Length: 166
Image (cartoon, rainbow, N blue to C red; front, side, top):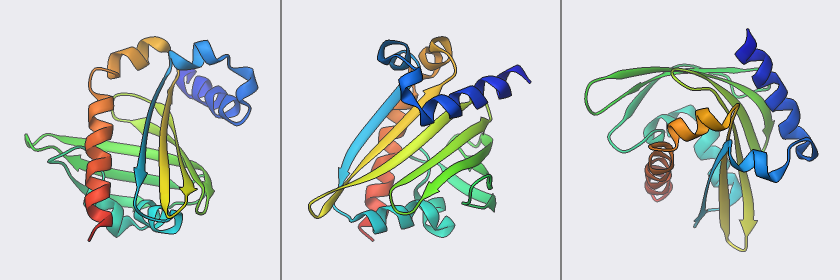
């Protein structure tokens, strides 16, 4: 129950960033950005349409089976990621905010690490800047996953870029 309480505090603090100093926040976050040659609506559709999302979600070589996808406030997203090595990763997230086509906030609950994920889409002329912001409950948890998450995020966005070109 302690983790759930801490994540609830993260949700509250993410809505009022004045409660978190930049210094403490930077030790608990991983931020990935990329400029895409697509408009915000196309970007949002790639995240909100489960058929599109299942095609690109995850690092290189992963595939997905979606069991539940309710992209509404408090809606649940349950899926299995199938790794290229044959290992399966059960995932569960809950959507906290859905602001079409600007922002998606979800709390990732499983399998091995919990975090708050905020995805924003910012138009820049005929392109969209995607910001992928992961906020962990502790600097130690962030440090533990920082060995593989930044590269995995880049691979994920590579797959999104390829999906958008189809």
